[in-house]
Amino acid sequence: MKTALITGASRGLGRALAGELARAGWALVVDARDAAALRAAATAFGGTVTAVPGDVTDPAHRADLARAAGGGLDLLVNNAGTLGTTPLPRLADQPIPDLAAAHATNVLAPLALVQALLPALRERRGAILNITSDAAVENYPTWGGYGSTKAALEQLSNVLAAEEPDLAVWWADPGEMRTGMLRAAGEDADAAPPPEEAAAALHRLIDARLPSGRYRASELADAR
Ligand SMILES: NC(=O)c1ccc[n+]([C@@H]2O[C@H](COP(=O)([O-])OP(=O)(O)OC[C@H]3O[C@@H](n4cnc5c(N)ncnc54)[C@H](OP(=O)(O)O)[C@@H]3O)[C@@H](O)[C@H]2O)c1
Image (tube, rainbow, N blue to C red; front, side, top):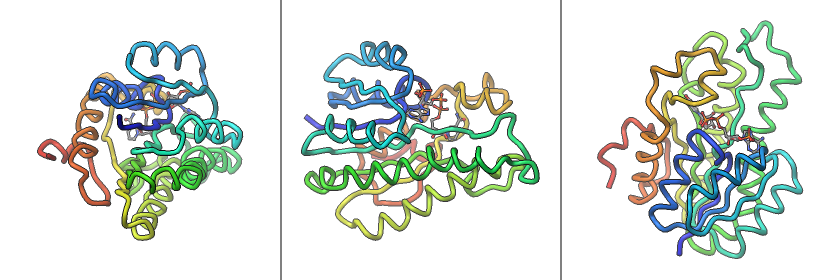
């Protein structure tokens, strides 16, 4: 049975992707900070699910996740993320401590999880999927702080792909999704597609084991 560790799986894209993989027979290790919401989601997934509540920025929690993943891991999905300051500020007004906290969640925690899980991933020639955003590469006003975290995650992924040729390393922009995060950004979330659409596209990426690189969920419709 294949095993995936998915961060931020209590709602939104993480929950949708965890549901996809659980239905396909994957064993899951999942996290989120709100323990009750995580347990409710894990029960809904069915199958073999280990729920480990905690904050990805907490080293002790990351050690718990690595223990739960055990000796072999097929897939690590760094999905948990934060917008940082809301309402989204222009860079002129970006509080630096907020930006440091956003980098801790969106960049440093994913890298620390990669470091902790590389031995287990190498054992199974596994894959890493880092969830990024078009904000990493576009210049939308007020999205600079958040965008800088996703740009950093993209370049870490790019170099990791070169350093770990036996793994698949993907960094993927899911596109706009109808989730709490998009709502918190002040966007019209109801006009966006549900996260299940991006999750299905990312599932195709995983199943097809496409080469390491940057992907957009909207372009994965035909992936096999
Ligand atoms: N929504 C969009 O339109 C959009 C577009 C492009 C990219 N993305 C990216 O897609 C990913 C998922 O976004 P989403 O819209 O699904 O977000 P969401 O609905 O806000 O869900 C975020 C999930 O991550 C968990 N989480 C947040 N901070 C965490 C932390 N420090 N430690 C552990 N878990 C944490 C949340 O649970 P708790 O709060 O209980 O911890 C929740 O389960 C993010 O990386 C986001 O940047 C989203």
